Length: 459
Figure 1 (cartoon, one colour):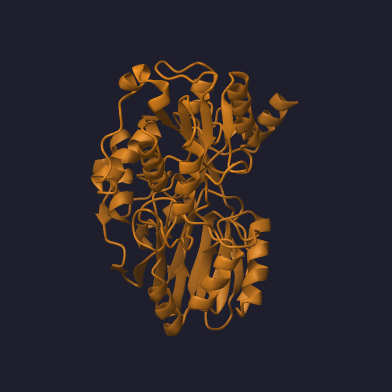
Figure 2 (figure 1 turned 120 degrees about the horizontal axis):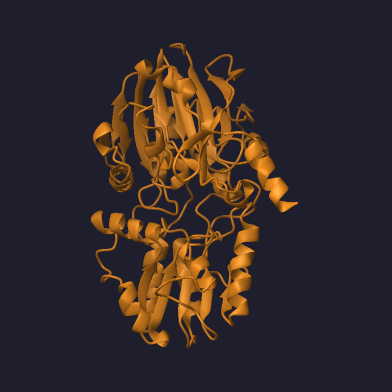
């Protein structure tokens, strides 16, 4: 039972690998959930679509849960919600864009009526006694990302979510630097902060530079152009459309998640200045010199649009010799083999493959080391708890945080119970971090034999 003189931080996911984010904050006998996401397994575990935190620990305490607050609409932060209801029977609080995405997913699974979904604007404060949660605008690779200033009687914790400093994000607001500075002036007990690029020197680039890279990559192409990236990156979707228009081309969206994100973006007004994308049937007879395919499949997913096109397995769309495929995304660790296989298929067809190593067609959505230093200068937390990364990422982040003057930086794993307080901040216990796996139909208790099966198949 968390006390009134402390904030308990307990990550059920997000501190042992990238993805599967689910964090618990406890104070004065109550609990707050932040995010409930999945991790995608790929070839690591054949037959398993996604893995998520088992909510058993907090499920047993639902009477004391005041709500779930969503930082943004990426699958590694919201992808478990429709799987875990009604086990997590508390109100969900999210921005308009995240609310739209969550609502559509709940509709698909027939659970929308079971969930109380409350929408708030970035900058608002949500009172969830004994927590007051202030949302602060940040930039990332999806609309409406936010950091959460979680205020309690024991002190304020800043949960950054996924973020970067982008002066020209192409859509949405820039990071609210003034709000972060004011928070630092007020005093911050601890910061739980994104570690994805904590081992990479420099500063993360702007979406505007990725748009410029796409403009250059489109120049001089005479065949069709396929672009693949993360479907949730609506700014990149807009950049592809603008690059296409500048080169007298039209865009067709290929892939369910791409269409789902376009629907959410248009509902929230983020694509008001773009005409509708062409349909698949129109694209099938459009002159290839005027065609851009914006596809899912940047991570080599077998059933994604680009993978099917590369195998000549798509009913309506195809690529051929003289066409170009642009990978406007980085490879998530573990996906390199699948991505390489798709690229090999494309090259065998005579398609030119362009990656971020060839041209600047992608920028990350996460902070590099200079960005982290700037965040610490603004917020000045007493304690640092790196999250969102592997142990190597968290350790690199902790070393940097100490160099920025924090009193203590804790490197933790999923299941560690962290006590944050004026006196006695430390890892105070541990909960076994159980997992659930989704096989496309059912939720299963995660078993390490699922990985062992993958090893046997690879042998």
